[in-house]
Length: 75
Image (cartoon, rainbow, N blue to C red; front, side, top):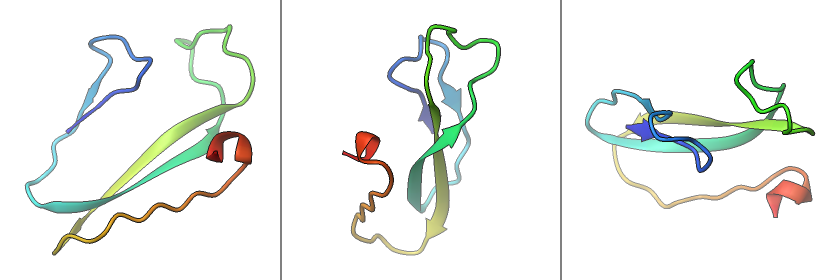
């Protein structure tokens, strides 16, 4: 599996090994402190990060979308 963001430069993607099979995923957008020394200091304001959780399942299921949080980023 490969994960990269819309603002990532080529070669900044992250690679993960995942066993074959079916998985469910939860993607959360959570408050975080500013990134480490490699972040752009002109990016002021609150910082958030994505958290992706995967777990194996035995059979497919419908997509569920739950939106919670401030309307400014929950839409």
